[in-house]
Image 1: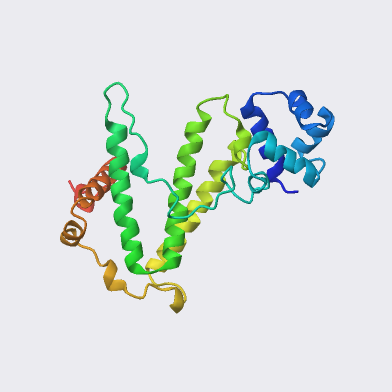
Image 2 (image 1 turned 30 degrees about the vertical axis):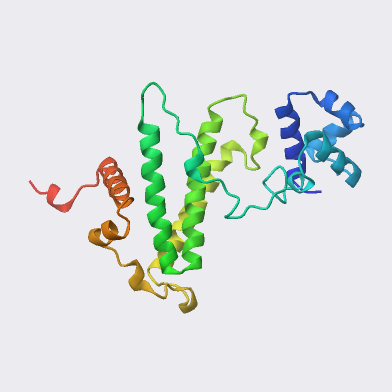
Length: 235
């Protein structure tokens, strides 16, 4: 078996809201043996793996950590839900979550289109890893807000996640900058660098619907960072 199996059968049982004793009875084994399986002390056989799959209504690929989808479905660009289909939530008349979502989504559209124009697979990989890590961190912050949420959903403990993810983001950022600056092997460099030459006019003409979001995002972040400009230091 693997390290994911004990964590996932524990998570599934707790999400189902049943005790270890109840689950063991349903699965036809002793509570002591199930405890060993959940702790990773012992490995189960294929028969128990299949029983778990049927009992929790998930695929064996999910239980083995092969697929993140509970039904074992392979993720493709065609079957990923369009982000616009997610309902926008407005609470107490506050439209900021909706505004920020659209601002970020529009800006990401520009970023990934420019990555596509660069035709650099490595640049796409590193920037994608960086952004996915940022979303992962945001989700874990929200997940931690409710103490009833099961930490076994994640393979990295809460107390270690921030450090690991920060390191991964810093590494991806450095690698992306290395590729962008051409400080890498010739085969890995951006070949059509002129395609990513940007001006505000170019952005407005090429992305008439999204460029305003990107410009606002840039302005908002730099305003919050309050970076002192050289002329501001002079009395």
